[in-house]
Amino acid sequence: MRRLTALLAGISLATGLGAGAVSAADDEVIVGAAIALSSILAPYDDAPFKGAQLAIDDINAKGGVLGKKIKVVTADTKSDPAQGANAAIAVIEQGAELVLVTCDFDFGSPAAITAQGKGKIAFSLCAGDPKFGVQGIGDLAFTMGNGTPNEGATLAEWAAKRGWKKAFILKDVQVEYTKSVADYFKGRWLDGLGEVAGEDTVNGQTDTQVPGQISSIKAAKDAEFILFPGGPGGPPIIRQIRAAGIDLPILMPNSLDGNYWIEAVPDLSNAFVLTMGSIYGDDPDPAVQAVMDKFKAKFGAPPVTSYVLSGYAIIEAWAKAVERAGTFDGQKVAAELEKFKDEPLVAGLTTFTDEWHINLNRPMLVIEIQNGKHKALERTRVEKVPEVKF
Image (cartoon, rainbow, N blue to C red; front, side, top):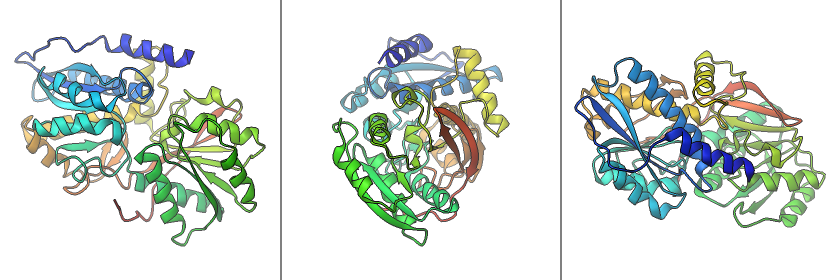
């Protein structure tokens, strides 16, 4: 809690911006962030929002977008979906042409729906549910996150490459993202890769004790690893699994990227996380490492999650689309974004189409955790993307 309190204070200091009256000068264009600046989701929105600020600094240093410097305004959703629409209205009324929304479909969609209704591009900082886009919000909604079909299938294929054949699936039913990763993992895993030795469900928000789930894992005696797509309540569950003497490898998606929670599971080992990039100074991609170095120089410490890359890439992508469209008009900018095909962005090769405004086949980096220390292993790209189902 001390780390979270300090982080939330840092967010306030880093932004230095409120939802007071701001208007765009003739030589400015406004980006509005209707995101969680406080409460439980703030750690998820913090890194990508700061990444967006880094990209804005870089773009402004080169003259801005269509000759206009980018200015940022913010409104705090307080990690409450009910506040999302109000936050979006607050930044749009201040002239926002691009609205950044929270790093989750459930929490970010209210703000995105509001932006859609006002004809503005909305970009989730990192939502992974495929509904974030045309299907669930509208044609002006995009996310720089990796789709859950991509994450689930990538984890399945990577596990198979390690020679594992039998999985235990511990499905966190807290939000659509965590449920979806587990479902897509299972679909790809059973598609000729391996078997399910056992499975159970948990709610990371309400289940503070998990003796039943631990019994289920122990009962699956031939399981070779655990697939655990956990949300914010995931670390205490991992701690209980290890305290019960279960040392099976644990595979986790991007939701458990970062070092902000590692103290909750002292000396965690034999764990693997799928990420956009390494925040630990060892990313094999020089462009990624350059952003990490800029982050530390600007904010005084490394980022707590790799989502800094998604925030940077949103501004990078939007600026490219605006320049190609020759306008800030939402519909025309969206049309240019839909032309992206393996567009090289700092978050990775990025593809959007008129059907999908989320990445379904982006390479991702596997991070190994041993004795509480993180190490970048390799980037891997899914070979067979599952069919997206709702």
